[in-house]
Amino acid sequence: DIQMTQSPSSLSASVGDRVTITCRASQRINNYLVWFQQKPGKAPKSLIYAASSLQSGVPSRFSGSGTGTEFTLTISSLQPEDFATYYCQHYHSYPLTFGQGTRLEIK
Amino acid sequence: EVQLVESGGGFVQPGGSLRLSCAVSGFTFSEHYMDWVRQAPGKGLEWVGRIRNKAKRYSTEYAASVKGRFTISRDESKNSLFLQMVSLTTEDTAVYYCARASLDSGNYYSDDWGQGTLVTVSS
Image (cartoon, rainbow over all chains, first blue to last red; front, top):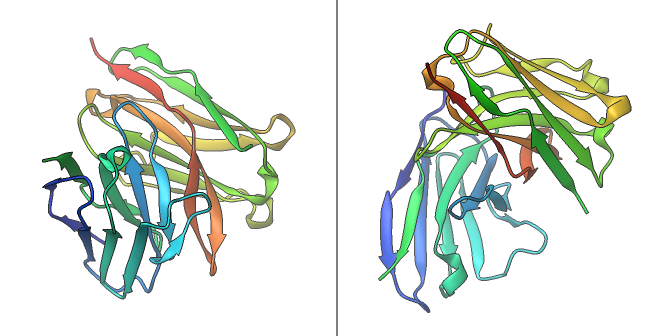
């Protein structure tokens, strides 16, 4: 199975900050990677697919990059509604697996 | 508007069974693969399994943790997805989400999700 490792596990930041979250795959997954945002008590929402393609309706302050085994999600200027938990997931092969999540908190 | 609405969650004793449903609307159900994903209380997301579309003969894939106990099916006439769960253990306690899977360069990823239904396995 492909293991997905996110870093950091948690992060404190302020409104307006630039934030980067990293996701590493235990083997090459090309660019078959999706990023989700989850707020407490809510379903996950897809933000980025194919490592760098913005999902329709997602603000342009979110961006993704990477290929192979290392990927990043960047939020260029944090807004109050961005404080949430973020997950990466590969869809290269079965089983699909998620990273453990990164909790983004208000400083 | 894409909508996915899960139902069927509840309280069940260890060793018991439960069937979850997911009613979908707002998209062409028959074209998409469909996923089940779960989240234990206070934990991260865990992919449960996938069912492909008619073109791929409704074939399925499962996580090792549920293989042989869980069965995913779909009814195109009812625009519904199902998850039959048997031999449940306390480790299966979670919110269960259904998700639509969409095509990207030959592979499928979950894009739209339902609100989830809680399954509690306890004696």
